[in-house]
Amino acid sequence: MREADKKIWINPVVFELHIGTQTLIHEAVHAAQVCAGKGKIKILGLNIQPSNYARPFFMRYTDVHRQDLEREAYAVQTQPNGLL
Image 1 (tube, helix red, strand yellow):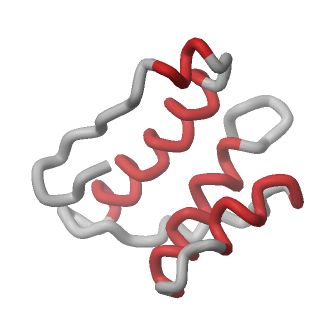
Image 2 (tube, rainbow, N blue to C red):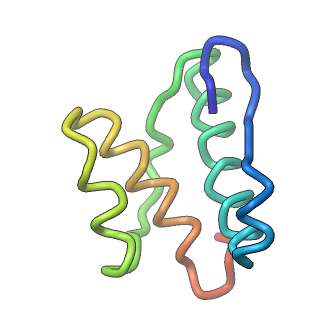
């Protein structure tokens, strides 16, 4: 998600890779984070953790704030029922 222009761009290949639903959920969390921050991206403070499988995906970010944002998005994305 690009915070500045409020657009989410999703590469169509995610649907060919059969990860479209997970990607949409992940990006929806980022949209909610921008809404919660009233235009600035902010942690929602959800009390859930991502699966261990997702850990390498958000740990690659060196910026701690970005890591926290991604951790939260992956936490929602990796819930067994796909939603909170």
